[in-house]
Length: 520
Image (cartoon, rainbow, N blue to C red; front, side, top):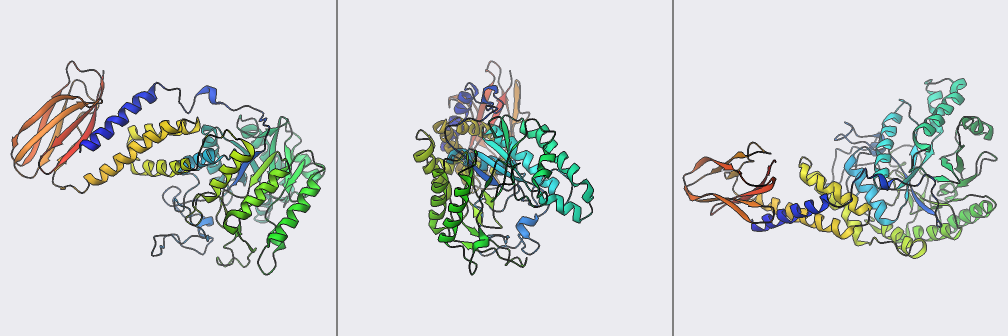
């Protein structure tokens, strides 16, 4: 147990050092510039905020089940049955889970993604739109903390669904669309982390699918100041749109296969027509492999072979060659269509390593993060889960988050390594005899006295010792042969400074250490 004590001492000393460092998630100097001006394109991942799990939301959301798969069923490898050919390394997650959001934005920060383009269904309480909207707001809060950027890709098909279901009247569609745009302006367009080019907020639409006329969108934007820099799918909706953005052209598949030649031809044609536009949102695609036919939804869009990462590398390089304003990575996490760059069991960190390498070689040669650093977010996530109720450890992990964001990787890694060692020691402690116990002192925190309870199952030598956070022995409370049973020992901290102290119980068969806090 001296190993655990040493580990705790290291952690507490690190905690003290952190307390005097300029890291804080609400640090005023970390506010992003209102108008994002760079001499290189922004790398933005198209992000889906549409997943729910019973542990967080109380149910499995449609995008994990598609009304066909049952995630409560597991195979022999422990993998849940989800609506995807691929499996996140975290397991299926909830888009409102703060631990997952922290994990995702840290991966983005480390790999070189500048932010996200959120696939957004509006803010109406219709179908699951409200849940998706709440998840988007949670995501935006973590985007801010990680000093990343975001933009919105509005799904105007939502208007059609609400009209079809008589939630709104067709005659109300324009006014409803204007209220959606007003929400964006009031809540996000003026945010310091919202993406703006030439002082105009960047807005995409996946379509349009309902408001198909340029005049409709001009009406939607009437009351906005400034009006957004607007991009539509595949083809520019002239004159209201500043340009368009590409997407995997699965409609060009032959026998359910989109060949590399067909993909390259599509991109060549797209970038040729885009050459006359003042602004360009380019696109990079890792693959496409949807689950819709297996989910019995009646269709399959086709398959784009990832070619062990080559498809992503080539489409990314083609995008960068166009000197775009934005490269949209398609996508961060669309599991239903298999266009995922976040870590999965199948691809692990492959795509993030590609992004990071491109960031270093083609965009920012001084990029400080390494491929090894990409392993840190999952370690943090696992520690969050294991020590969910431990305020001290979660406080340390909050500081680790800030350290990674501000590039203090070595300091962050030192704390994570110490906490990981603590985890291993705690696991070893669980194998010790269950009939030995060392209880938490009471009261805790305390001043100046507290009581420590412990149980031993047989007579023997017992030693109970108190240490300060530097590992120095402060007091020997017990050093004697005691009978079996429950024992209580009082500790008086008169004349000791306020601090964190450790108390350690040792017998021939059992050793354990706990922490206690002396108040001033």
